[in-house]
Image (cartoon, rainbow, N blue to C red; front, side, top):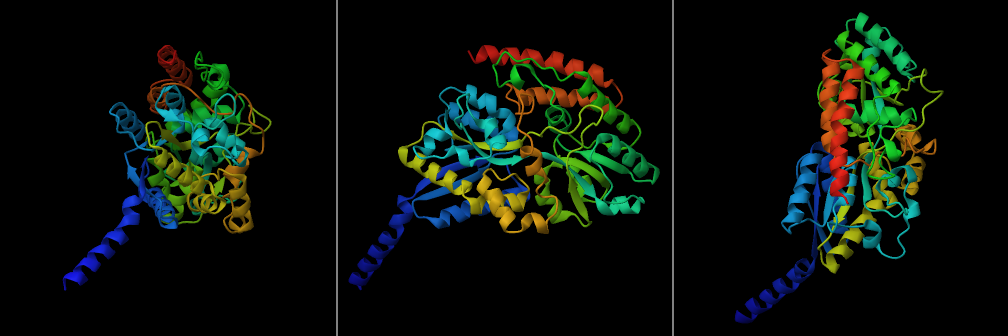
Length: 432
């Protein structure tokens, strides 16, 4: 009996050894709902694919809360291995000296940075072209359409919505037909100022939108931006545009079937596909024909994965393995198809096309085309501005004053620029 107990104990110890030897990788992210489920699925797939590492994914709140949690943890010496940071936090992470380990260094020799789509990785690269973080969930804004709602209003569901002039005409028809919410939006600053500027090849800020230096100043109060914001303000006054909130509160109105048109991230696909009880479609983000002969390119939103300093060699090896896994064509193609986020590699886009996804799900390739048809210019490469989370809050406040009819677009955008530039100066001083 004693011998059997001894053998049993030995077996238990031996079977436990591999699990005890696994290196744990902490991954903090900002996803809940369907996206949170899909992240958990990725992590589980990686963990079961090998025996050396265990990734532990933890939700830390929304984008802003996750960034703040990461900063606080680093100051306390308790930082995770991997931190998800939204795109507007890029300049903050770059300026956080000693806090991050560039991805290209983590991945080591043989890391092929050319496999990543230029319009996506460019947001997260240094001046010499090296990747500082890994693009993870990269999206771009599109126009979602409730085709059933258009039909009910007597409008052809395939009506041309390529320009804002055409959208304006359709909004009038929807309003006249008694539709309570002709159009709503998510992420108003990102879509209706940041992307509007890039899409029309006009600067949002000086110094190449901040890529040139930290001496940048905000310039998004030019006639083009004013025209668009004033048009939306007029639509809000006339009941053609329903404002629901600063983040994605309008998504519930659209997914519930209340709104006909919805400007949102391409990544809205996951939630819309899961919840919408109506025939929906996706169109390119409209542009103003009065301002441009055609659209330039939209810019990305979403987040990238930053590797934190202060980890062991074993942890960095595990991080590299996990990031390599996330970049693989099969995993990337599935993520792209499940979520609507952009594929971060050309191989994943090619695989998606080969699998027939774009053919079976019309419109899901629009985001990719918007980002890659034209070579990005200095005005459409993206934004790299310090304290931009706080600046976005200022922009939100000023846009809300326009939607409420309390300010003209010119007054609001002038005020946003005036209030935002001091934050850029403080960031510049702190980055020296």
